Amino acid sequence: MASVKWGFEEISAHKRPKLLRALLAEFLGIFMLNLFGCIAATCGDPAVISIAFGFEVFMIISALGHVSGSHINPAVTVGFLVSGQVTLVRAVLYVVVQCVGAVAGTACMKAFLPESEHGELCHLYLDPSISVLRGVFIECSVTFLLMLTVLGVSDENKSESKFSAALTVGLVVVLGNLSAIKFTGASMNPGRYFGSAVIAGSWENHWVYWAGPLLGAIAASLLYVHLFRAPPRSRENEQGHDL
Image (tube, rainbow, N blue to C red; front, side, top):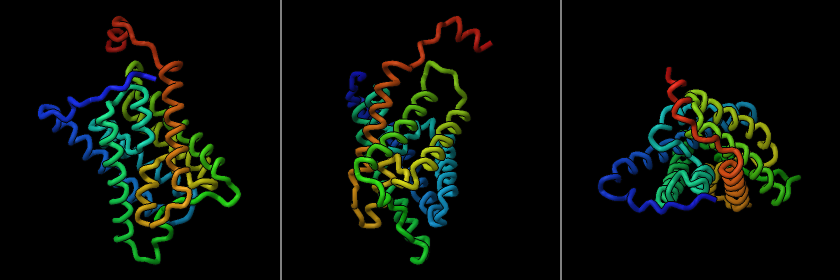
């Protein structure tokens, strides 16, 4: 595990405006994710739901990634904290605004749509055939895949285009949803789930949707940092790449 950086300097007067912009971007990103994702979920078609969430993530990263990194997911934020890429102060603030933004997004979905279209307000439940431990394992697995991909495409030692990085993460979200939506609803995102749980007023197996994604993100971060991180590029290679 990388050494944790406290990051108290980020709330100093000099750096505070940049941090506030990042927090607003995280709030807006997960707000849109819950609002439009939950609206898409009312159709009930797993394929449509999976594609909708994937496209949303692609759009949000493309539009706001340069501002905050577009974590829009407490598990991803914790993964970046473990890998030493964000400070503790920033991570805590990100998680708070992500949860608040998710609640606001689902609340707006409830307000915009007629009651007959609310469904479960995008709240997720374990399939009756799945035990809570299996639910944790499934959420852990799909979030592990997501976090590993996020770390791979955001590795500062790799020269990947921003467009392909956003598209790759969006496609992994689609894959995760298609793989697990039947069994757990494929949250992969404790914040997104929290927003729906608050508005729906349902807390059944809530801990599963935090424990699974957080464990998966932490495991992926430790594995990537210690085994898979790309080696630093030499100055000669960087110059050659620029030519």
